[in-house]
Image (cartoon, rainbow, N blue to C red; front, side, top):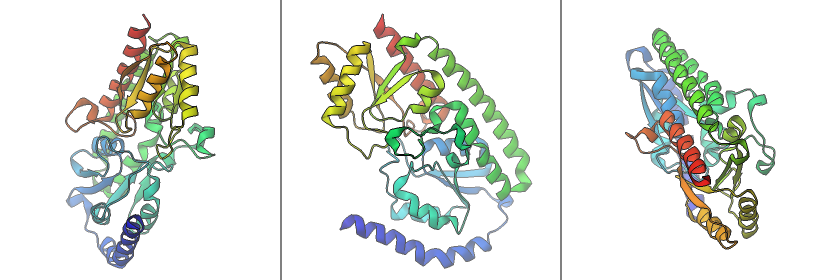
Length: 315
């Protein structure tokens, strides 16, 4: 009942504010005279907006460190923030599945942009466990992330054309950093022999990573953490680890570690020792003010953790 009430309250709030917000948006002042108020869902999207928008944007990310976007439900405060925003950026491809209705309603009043859905479909993955839908975790392939972010620059320029040169300059500078990052990830991945490139995590968030950098990826919970890993999933993956002699598996910052710990115990019961190689950032970045609190730092942390664990423990 409580969940139904909360959903109904948010829907009612959106309907009541619709007329008022429409008039407000029509009367919006020239955005070149102030900062653009931006609301995003994930930290990865927020970080991209900050890099491209620079001093011209104020950015609020609804989902902080350790927050699982698959399970996130918007609060009354979140709805108010989106109502007051000039533009909303989110990942899309059902990553923020429980917020879909809100995004649909917001689209009629203000720019509401799903950046992952602007990528050409030929570059997206459709794993069988996601039942014909596209895998939303595009940021794990840095090259693919570079294809997603131009829409941010385009949208900001459309809102604030007088400052288009600043957005273009910031976008080009950020793109160069992403190119360097992509090269770094490839170089580090090459340190792991091809027959040892296996990445075992709590859920299948790393398919794009595996596809781009040559890792076989297995996750316990499928692409969405809304599903639970069963006993058969644990036992099957334990046998895979044993057969491949995989030395390390990994927990994720936005997923409780119990499933990976259960997997480790199942492997050890078969007289093989697999270590937990470290904590990876999957659906959320690290704390603000830390290297992992940026997209560049998060990706570097992940590849360093994966490579170092697989190499060290295989010696």
